[in-house]
Image 1: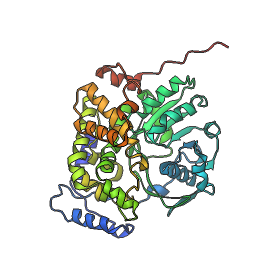
Image 2: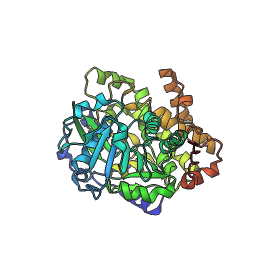
Image 3: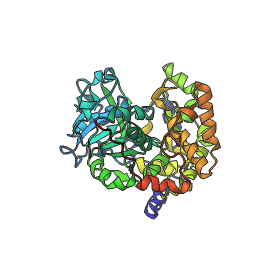
Image 4: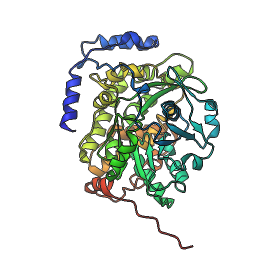
Length: 434
């Protein structure tokens, strides 16, 4: 970690006070009770760091009216991205292979409290992407390979393709898919470590953006393309920080820490939510036992693997939360349960909702365990969750997930990984004689 970042985190965790409580939206009683417990707890090792007033969502962006954007995907993050960028004045096209999923947005994306954005909904992915400066793939990681296949014949030289987010190894997998499909275009392939927005559906055609992250990290593959990535992406999101490389963004992906364990081990909350009881995911589902006994060691394994890989910056979950939300407490449990940005995030009603298990296990935990074995770092908690999810769902996630071979890393020695992601170019496709 850089000295400046370390000093900033240390300074912030020293303790600011909670502010703006009166301006927060109403939340379920269970959330209020836990927040009261946490704020009043003498055992907390750090005071909460309050979020600044929400202003970034309406802030102007230097790329508006200049950068043309294609958004691919149909989940909440895609709707928030397409709607918000259109509202800010960007020329946005939006498409998905599931055309019916975009039908509720035919009259625009109503962003609760902000207005309505009007991206152009395009039925053809080819037409959506053609001529666009930037292609944002806002879909579950289980769909990244499919989107790579769709994009292979239509991408053109100079376009920038960003997985938002990439989870762990997204850009590596996408580049391998493009190569396997003989994509001849010279494009910038990149990923972010996290989704820029935390959205919540509020009915047909309506999305509430609970927060646009105060900071997030992105990297290109290879890292030699980072300057090009920054020049384009900062026009949409000035808060972007360009990471060292895609191993950096992949190992600073914290989704695998806070999503699968709570879904698998706190299933009672999922059942209660399905029955209509108001439950908040980061308060009720991320309970203290799961957070302390599973998520904390899981986070430690992720950090250990990243450091063994030789990455300069590997953030703990609390450090990541401070960077993204300007909010952290003394533990993972206290950090997520007291984050104002999470209070409107209802607990899922289904074990497979939001991809917290079937997406995160194969695309966050499996590659983490594989990288751990490569660099000699034990990952017993990561392995246990992979095995539990595989047994519960009847899927061999170790086989179907992002293996080193699938990421184009098979056979590489640990010392060669950084050179691979920093400098390596994919092999050019072999031309076929007419």
